[in-house]
Length: 214
Image (cartoon, rainbow, N blue to C red; front, side):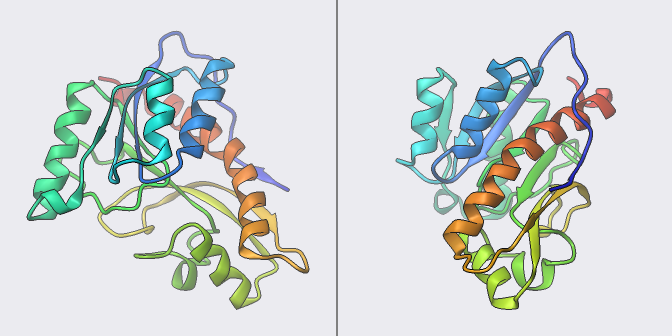
């Protein structure tokens, strides 16, 4: 399957990444593995979950990464919720925010434009009308792809804007849909592709935007 992105170049000092999640932390685990192998010159300096008690927090704890829960329900507005998130991220001097299965909307505050990346498990913008947007994540996306009858799906890394899954795509990878696929089998293959695509794209983006370093 074609991988349409560049591999990261070697850096001398790591970037500080802030990882946002809402679930099992598989993407966080993968990023930590890639960093440990020396394939991405970055440090995960903080993890924030929108949901308490999820496995992603255990992954952060096992790696001795500061981790917090900030719940949307504890704030009376999107702005208040987002401000609480940015306060934590700035306290840990985060250069780049990486969404890793994060299921809440976050307003883009001034100074954070171009500093937030996300990965979505389909090809954007082509699959956007039926497999992206509010409420479409995880197996729901793969269910929509199968219902549509697409022969090819994949994953897309994009910049985050104030609209769900509509930020400019940075890189994508194609994954074939095979006869007999279920949302689980398709999702498993897409995630294997994501494990390569996301770290490589993060590295490429860091190399291309040194001005984002704090």
